[in-house]
Image (cartoon, rainbow, N blue to C red; front, side, top):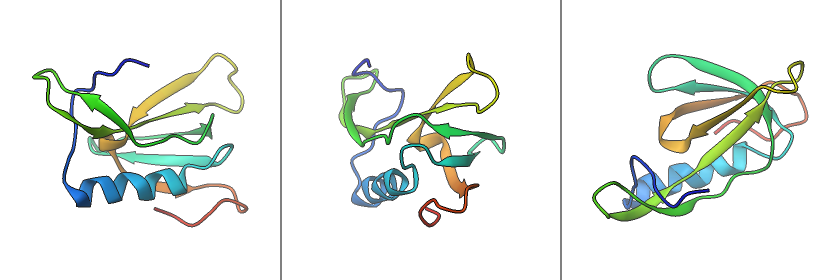
Length: 100
């Protein structure tokens, strides 16, 4: 994965929110992600994401993260979503951890 991100964050509240997302996005969890643009997407978390260091276009260093989803019925469908685009995580399977 590239070390570039459109947006990076350094405020403790943003970092804490991203850490909370990581807890909700466990490996294999079936989720619906609600996005800042009002849309949502559903899928299975391919692997638990992490909060990582990135650089924005101006060279500013900060954190963000990416979760990769795959679709249960479409083997060639994958979607990557940046943490800062997620407003809420809805867990769709009953054995998954609590909502973020």
